[in-house]
Structures are given as structure tokens and as C-alpha cells.
Image (cartoon, rainbow over all chains, first blue to last red; front, side):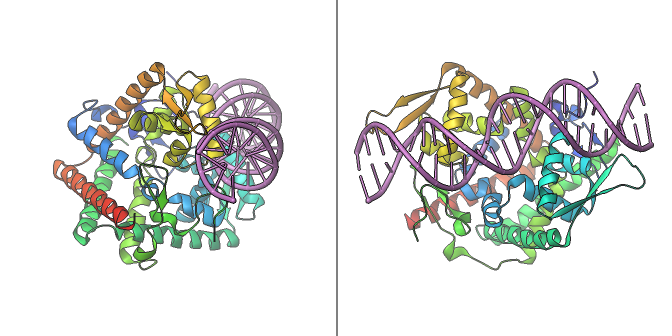
Length: 184
Length: 184
DNA sequence: TATTGTTATACTCTATAACTATA
DNA sequence: TATAGTTATAGAGTATAACAATA
């Protein structure tokens, strides 16, 4: 069953991966475990409890307010800063919206002089979005705000727990990367 | 400086807490650490890398699609299911939106027959939102979907890492709870 | 024929300001 | 006077469908 247009596949794409290009693969099949286990319910419960603290639920919220930007705009600027100039379609995938939606988002960022569009010389259909100087300066400020927020979260943990968290995330990343490669 | 209406305080409220009532406190002051440290940058970088995997960035996305709901609607239903009948203002705080916004959200959920409004007999100004039978049934299905998503994430970790994650989150919760009490 | 992006349309989310009803 | 919620308005995000240009 072909999925229409660029609509993301529903349901089983929980483990989909955004590769560096525009492709994505569904990796979920071989990993489908039990629907609900004591551990999954425990994690769910912990997330609910932590979600009662606003800052942990949405650390981006105050950053958006401080800089007078929407969450989507911050996402777009952060990914453009991280990845460098990108096809707008790739950018849409990064931030998890459709190609129809990214057009308006980039329109507004362009209007704010934070982003500019150019045609891709190698594929004349494609449009490349890049940060302007002003956009890059804002990206630096956003980055500092995010680092500050990260520091505040880490300040709530014991040093050993911080190390444990880093190790855990790194092993998770390694696992994800190797699984992605297996199927590519 | 009094802040106008119910607008959340900007900036320093990163560590604000939603207590069980409607109050919130700013706990940030005494915790303000260095703006950017090697550890905060490391955490930021890890989050960026993990964010390249769509499922980890937004595990709610496919659940919203499957059930034909918006993220805000799912949040509202989940908190109503978790907390039970709530003042709509309290619900707004839970999901991090203003009182003006919650009205429209509850309007639409009410129109879908998932939520119903009643007046609070003890405070005739207040409006209580509660799940209908249909809403409660949907809440159960959403809960199962979330548990399933949690299980898929946990399946990517070693059993020891899962335990480490639980312990880490529990200590973080305890830390947050005691800090909240200190200043209440 | 398939892909990249845009346009047009409609609905939802969101905040601000002004308002009503109750405390 | 303060608080809980609604209404009105406007801007942004989002998806769907139809379309244009390029491959």
C-alpha cells in the first residue's frame, strides 16, 4: 500500500529514523515487543510525575517567550544552525511537519530576515534554506539559552546520575545508529 | 512587578512547578548555576543527536495520528484521565496554555462528546471539566498506546540501563518534590 | 511518471484585550 | 478589588487537495 503524497506512514513508524538525507526507514517491525509491561508502565508513570513540573515538560517554552518566537520557528532555526543550509523538504522532516507546512514557516522566517532561500543549482526543483547573518547570531543566542536550560536540569541531579545519564544516552544512540545501518 | 492577568512569568521560571492546586512558584533563583558548562553542552549535543530519530523526538506524533487528535487534545485528555475532574484553569496550567486558550480546546472536546462541563457548586465562578464515558474509553486506549511507545523505547536499552534510568528519574523526582516543599 | 515545492482552503492552537459573573 | 472563565480578534501551525516546475 503506497502512502499518498508525503504523508508520513501512520502507526508503525514509531521507530522511523531521519537519516542525513531525506530518506526514512521503518525499523519497528523486528522490535515490536509486548504492548504493555510493568517496565513500560513504570516509565509512563515516571514521565507523568515529572511532567507535573512545567520546566521539565517543556524546557523550550521560556526560550520561545524570551526570544519572541514560536516553538516551530526555534526548531527550524536550531536545525538550520546544526545542519547548515538544507533543502526545505529535509528541514520539514527534521522538525516533523509536512512540505506544505514548511513553506509558510520559512516564509515567515524569511520575512523576519532570519533565513534566506536559494535554488539548488544541482536540482532546480529544490530550494535551499540558510541562516542569514542575523539568523546565525540569533542561533548563537538560542544555543546559549538551551545550554543554560540544560545546566539547570543537570543541577538537579547528583554528579553520578549525570554521568549515568550521559552513558545511557550514548549507548542508546549507538544502538539506534547500528540498527539504522543494518537495514540501509 | 506584578505580572498581568494569568500570563506566565518570563525567563527565570524554568524551574517553576505545577503544584496540585493552581499555584506555581519560581524556584530558579537559588539554583542559577553557570550558564554553559562542558556537561550542559554535552547533554545538549546528545539531545540533538537523539532528536535525529523522529520517534524519540516526538513519540506522541503517531499516537495523535492514529486517534485523529491534536497534541493539545491528547494532553488534555491524558491529564483529565490522570487527575480526574479538574477546573479548566488548572487543566490549562497542566498542559501549559493560558485560560483563554483552554476554553476553545475544551469547547472542541465537548463538541466531540469526550468531555463535559459542570459548574463547581462550591465556587460558582469555576467550571469543572470531566471525561464522558466515551472520553474515558478513549483515555484507556491512549494510555495503552503510550505504554506501547514506552515499551518500544525501553526495548532499545539494556536491562541495566533501564533500571539506571528509573533510579535516576526517581531521584530527580524526589529532589524536585523536596525543593518544592522547602519554599511552599 | 515521480519528485520538490507552492498555493488555496479550512481548522486548530495560541496570546492579547475586553468582558461577565462570582467572591 | 480580585479571580474564573468566556468572547472577539488576529497570527501562527497544521493537513489536505490541486498545481507548477523539474527530473
